[in-house]
Image: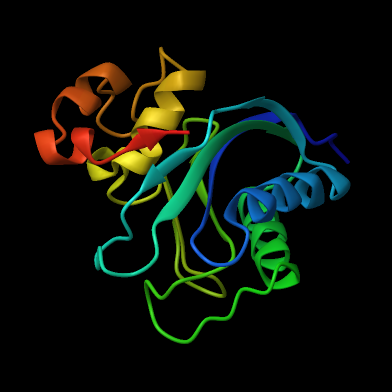
Length: 169
């Protein structure tokens, strides 16, 4: 039996219901209790809800973690933490107490349909200010695992309105 090797991953955590900052701190605490080591955490960033800016604003962070869990195991843990924090899944993009997404797992490309829907790197991250800016804060040399484009370049491709609408808090 081979030993599991340590892997590094980036996870985005967001909240737009209740005490958003506290929800994020609780999510970090719960992840660590489940043997996920947080190496770095970005500042909090406030953004409009996507795709409907009329819904409550989000607070988002990105963390760099060290884990022995596989991508599927990690996703299961993230989903459990969301549920523990009161996440209800009724409709896509509805307001939520906690949203946890695996952005990058060891610079791998994965697509698993069943039993879970898992795509790594997370789809559309190159268009999401609420992922790219916090990620840049903690990993200035990060490259997209598929396109190999550096994060600074990805940020330069964002629309001006997306850069203006995000606020570090």
